[in-house]
Image 1 (cartoon, rainbow, N blue to C red):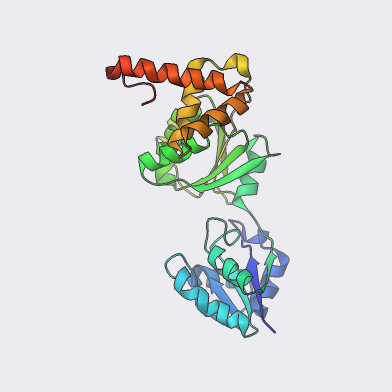
Image 2: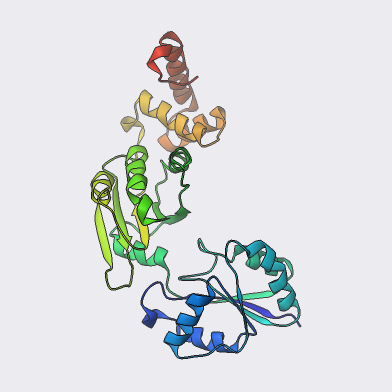
Length: 292
């Protein structure tokens, strides 16, 4: 018989949030794969337990190489427990490759649910939580970051991001540029820890606040784009939306169709706006605007 892969959620701050099953699984596992073995030792000490199984590291740097080894152990009948430094494995943390490999081999995969920075931040943000999408970490390079943000500029669901504290001010400024300065957002810092803080406001105000420097683990929650009807969209806005989609990789024909559908307009009307902008750009190339 093959073994079982167990994905275990760990506290994101307060050790008291450890799920009751976590200690039992740590003691029971034949192999414990940990993102940081030192953090694992701290966790087991805090829980007052000892692991009896083999402990191995499993992090971004060795994830590809170590996955076959863990799959082999699973095929041999081992119970393999995967833990990361905080939160749920696979959610912007190591785990996806191992889960995918186990599923391909028809190995049982189960989970010990635990704390989640994504859901905790959503609940505390004060923004709509009925529909949301998790975007993880944005690219570090400014151009790539802007491109990624433009891909979701018209997304109506609430957006959730992780970010490093030293990049927070640049990220919030980029969000204000792409989403609009007055778009509502919340910066959640040090969730469940002693100095937990949730700062709410417009992207412009939050970017100014973050310019002085922010410390700790950061989760950013951003309001989705407002619904808008045909009367609210002039030709310039229609062209801008087509440009955003094209910059995200869509072909112009598909971008025009998508914008027309979202706006409730005939495709011809959006097409005409794009053609007019293109012609205007040809007549005044020095202006730097319009479609090429």
